[in-house]
Length: 141
Image (tube, rainbow, N blue to C red; front, top):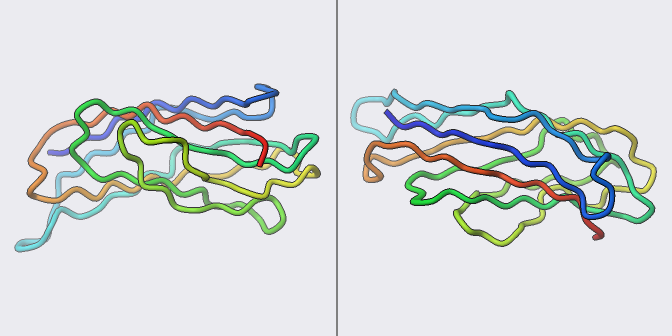
């Protein structure tokens, strides 16, 4: 069995009131097709809400996961045109903050995006548990 635990921290460089999120999704992978790698699993149980600032901004993402063994990525879904441009980010322990949602216009107001986490381990990773602390930060673009 392969488990992922996630803690989400939402912060904002200038205004902590404009970035918030739901926390602590869990992903457990315990299935595979005979002769192939474990079946990737997706969790969409978390959301992040953001608003425009007095400047065009972006949201970055980073993670800390001591002794990370498994592949994990995140994508913001449900972001409508004109409210930012999301990209998929592979989460790696100790990574520098990576652009996650860019080009957030000043006019954006209470936009909610679903966080789609995808865990895709390999048999060669073995069994175990990864616990990520994922940080989202809204900053000047």
